[in-house]
Length: 290
Ligand SMILES: NC(=O)c1ccc[n+]([C@@H]2O[C@H](COP(=O)([O-])OP(=O)(O)OC[C@H]3O[C@@H](n4cnc5c(N)ncnc54)[C@H](OP(=O)(O)O)[C@@H]3O)[C@@H](O)[C@H]2O)c1
Image (cartoon, rainbow, N blue to C red; front, side, top):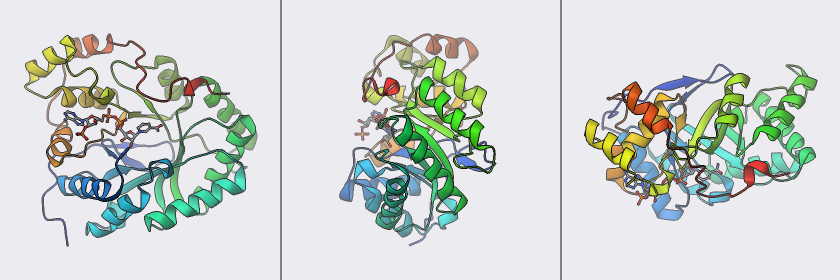
């Protein structure tokens, strides 16, 4: 069945360092699986989302892929991200990617990430080399990393420098997907990625709801007559981050996308920028993994 609903808000697209574009707002799918993941993905696509975030780890690639295929949208109109669960060397990365594509029933992913830095320098470098080769073979369009701290990023940039443009692993990560919200700002990583030309992608952009009642969030939400979730998503949008809030509720999925029709004023952005408390929502210590 074709999607008949109009796109509800014009979702901005950002240009990645490989020249391709990514819808700035996507829907997160963790920890939904089975019918819940399928229904939420369909609801998101019906509401106008064109970017879905899945991963081998989430166990929902099949549900997400089926929802994308059933949506009636052209494959080229939907941006699908998945992630390599474990860094276990070059061949294992390729095998895992093929498994993910098979499960999703897709010919390619728009973006494929090393999900974590865990595994050590050699496994990271081999995983990265495999991703870049997969990109060159057309199995994935863009490649990036997730949960990479500054040392991991420096390490990848050394691989890239040694490789040159066409050598093994010779592509700068298009994105780094990390835990990012007004309460978790990771300014060192963000600044480094900006220098590298790597876009930030914010997971847990809502801090999983843990700070919806923070006085500054409540004040700004009231001022703009928006929900706390919309304020937190809009904060990320105004920082030019890619933002992937998760919801299983069609109503919340829809309202989370209504963030391209208002603007938070500079003085309110400054207040939100000051809320960092290095809040950890998940993966404690992963940015420092050896
Ligand atoms: N790369 C990584 O290591 C990594 C790690 C974690 C997550 N991720 C990705 O990032 C996505 C987003 O992060 P996240 O799911 O951890 O956290 P999140 O998006 O910050 O928060 C999700 C939580 O907020 C609730 N919520 C959503 N919209 C709401 C609204 N408008 N009002 C009230 N509550 C609302 C959801 O509940 P309902 O579902 O009931 O609405 C859910 O409990 C994930 O789904 C996943 O795709 C990546």
